[in-house]
Length: 174
Image (cartoon, rainbow, N blue to C red):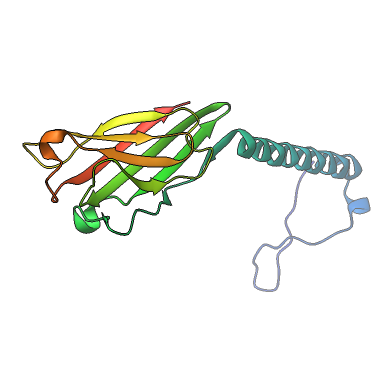
C-alpha cells in the first residue's frame, strides 16, 4: 500500500483530519477501550498510593523541635547565639519505636531545682544524664521524671558558682 501525503498551496505537507470510521485497518474502538482501561488502572494505582501515604502517616511521625519553657530566673538559649540550639524536645516514631530528645541551652543553672516542665507522657521512664558545662567543673546531672519535671543537680564542689551553663542534647529510644 502506498501512502501519499497531501500538500497545501505552499507545497508544505499537512495531515488532514478525518472521522474514526473513515480510517481503515485500525480498531479505534479497541484502542479507546484500552486507553480507558489504562486510565482506570492508573486511578487505582493513585488510590493505592494515597492509602499507603495515609498509612505511613499513622506509623511514622516527627514532632519537630518543640520549644519548652524554662524557669524565668534561668537565662534560656544563652549559649552560642544564632549558632546554638534552643531548649526544646522532639519525638520521632517508626511503628512502635519512639526516639525522644531534649536540648538544653541555658545559663545560671541552679542546684536541686525544677528548671522545666515537660508534657505529661513525654517521659515514660525516668531519664538521667550528665550535661556539658563550664570547663574545670564537674558535669551537671539532669533528671527527667515521668511527671514531666526536669531538675538539675550540681556537684557539691560547684554549688556556690552562679556562672554554670548547660549546653547538651540527650536522646533515648523507647
